[in-house]
Image (cartoon, rainbow, N blue to C red; front, side, top):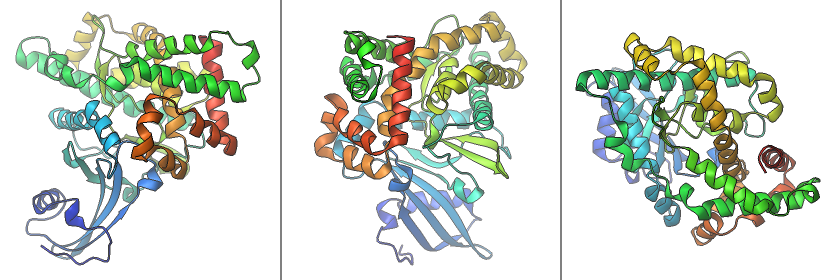
Length: 416
C-alpha cells in the first residue's frame, strides 16, 4: 500500500504491512486507515550506541482524522561490527525477553507508568509510543541528577523490582516449585564483551592514560596502577550475577540519563519511565540502585544523600510486595539490613561499570558518531585502545573531562 509522504525515508523499509496493521489494532479503532506519515531519524539527537532511532507520525482516518506518534529503535544501519556485538551479547534478545515478561507480569494500566508499553518488539526492532508527545523529557547529560530526580527514579526502579518479585512468587505457587528464571533464560544472561579480560584491559588502559594526562595526583599513584585497574574492572564485571540464598530479580543495569524519561509538574519531576532493557540481567536488586547512583550523581551527593535514597527505594519496594512475596522474602531473610549489605557489595560494580561506560555515552553525539559509528575503527576502539579519541575530546570539552576525571580519581582513592 502506498501512503502520502514527503520523506526521504521510506516507511515500508522499516515496517511492513502486517506490522502496521498490528500497530493500528493497538492504537486506533477497527477499520482505521493510514492516510499519510512523517518519519525522521533522531539518532544524532539521542546519541544511542546500540541502535538507530526514528520518530514516526501516522495520520490515520477513524471517525475523524487523528495522529499516532511512535518511537522506533532498530539494529544499527550500515555498521555490521556493532550489529555483531549486539547479537553476540544478546542485547536485543534480552530486551525482547523483558517486554515479554512485562506482559506476563500483568502490570495494570497506570497514570504514572514506570515502563513504556511496546507495540512491537523483536530482535530487529522495538516500536512504542513517542513519550515526548506525552510531555516526558530526558535529563541533560552535561549535569548530574539532583535529589528530586534520583528519588523519582528510585521509585520506578523499586516498582520494576517489586513487579518481578511478585511475578516470581506467582510462578512458584502456580508451578508448585521454586521459580527458576535461569533454567529457562540463563543462556541469554551472558555478556561476552564484559566478562572477556580484554574488555577490562582496554577500560583500564583508558583510565590509566586519562589520569596520566589530566590528574594532578598522578605522580602519587601506585607504579602498578594499570594492573590494579585491570583487576578492579574484571572483578566488578564478574561480580554481577545471580547469588544463592538472596533475592534476585531482573535488573535494568543501564540506568543512565538517556535511559530515563521524566514527567514534570512545573520544574518538579513527578514520574520516571525506564527505557532500553538491552542490558537486562538477573541479580540482586542492589546492583541496579548502586548503578543508578554512580551513573547519575556526584560523589558529594552520595556522601550526603545515599542512605536516604536507599531507604526510600526499599520502602517503596516493600510496600508493593504482595503477602505471598513478603513471606517468600522473609524466608530469605531479605530485609533492609540485608539490602544495605548487598548495596555495599554492589558498589564496586556500580563505580567500575560507570567508568567503563562514561567515555562512550557522555561523548557529544557528533563526536561519538565520528568515533564509534565507523565500522572500520569500531573493533579496535572496543578491543584494543580508545584512549586517543577520549582524551582528544576531553581536551576540548571541560564538562566531559571533569566528569571522567572525578570518577577515575574516586576509583583510585577508593580501591587502587
